[in-house]
Length: 432
DNA sequence: TCTGGGGTCCTAGGACCC
DNA sequence: TCTGGGGTCCTAGGACCC
Image 1 (cartoon, rainbow, N blue to C red):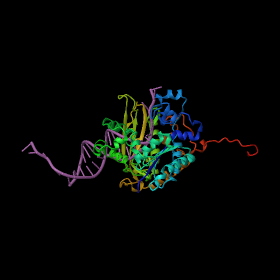
Image 2 (spheres, rainbow, N blue to C red):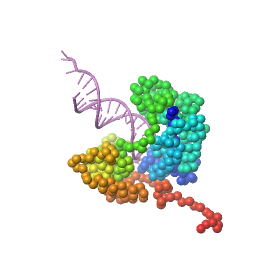
Image 3 (cartoon, rainbow, N blue to C red):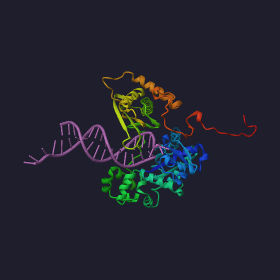
Image 4 (spheres, chains in turn blue, green, purple):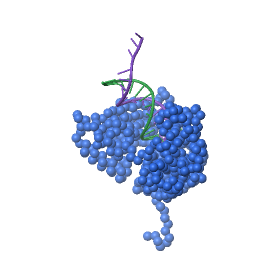
């Protein structure tokens, strides 16, 4: 059966989440910042038009924020993750097969749907998501994921498509590919785009028609897959299986430089707890724990200092206290007195399913069942009542090294005390 | 002064095996 | 002087994605 993919992508997702709860932001330039209020990571169309670039550091564009009275928000991932879940739940109503590709994107399989009605169906999806969640989306449809991605991009840029474009059903798809720069193709980043440019290949159409041997030689098999996908041959399949991560990283920049070991220990314990929660959520255990510290990427070379240390566990573990103690040992090995650290992180690798963990003949601990129960109770309480309802003393209580988040909106949908308040005025006689 | 936080996949090269 | 022909596994680094 002919494959048909739809890529549904939320427009300016984080900004749209803020707008869903604050309609006053509609029509205004709105910006959402990265963690630690460092960079711009989401912009409304109005903000884009005023010249705020994606990924730009805040200190380089604050003058624009002030000049145009932009609405600026810290990121509120609790809210965005919950809104994402609502959008994905809605999309799942429209197809039996779908892949959640990122927090704001999903691929839907529309194989078997009548090809003459695809655009209409896309419009129905679009209006439903808007109605049920308040989030605007764009939809691109094609016979491969790469073509669906391109169709989505075109739909988003050209309002005349009404937010939905089926590139495969278009009378002259090549005329569309001719207008797409190679750098706009999924899988072609800055480096490959410049390599292609040096070889006279500037558009998606040119890449589609380039010889396989040349592509393979210069862009490896991934490049070849992209070219084939442009030609309509699916090489990248829909990945429905819930992902089991091969490495789990938890790291943050500090709100201010940190130089004491005790504060670093708090931070590392905090990051281990986060990483271990993710580990248990996928029912895995980790056998290798790494810790890194850095004084920041933007220092001059002689002032810049980054170090990391790792250790094998005697046997794979999902037990936070144990992981913290190994992480601390690593931390102590790399900590240097007098360094002003800007960021630290913990990486868990060597990940295996809990049921397949290779036990150690010599040190096997007998109370795994107890540890499992304890972790389960903690995870349940923290899921039910909010993150860190129960936390490790090792993670500290003041945490004044925490990242800056000076302009975060309320967690409208996940926290009872931050739920939106509706001010209603009732006609006389109806109020109780 | 101020610059996010996650991930994946591929290749090359070295160590080692028979 | 001449020096095989396969493999595997691991790591580092580079490319990409959101």
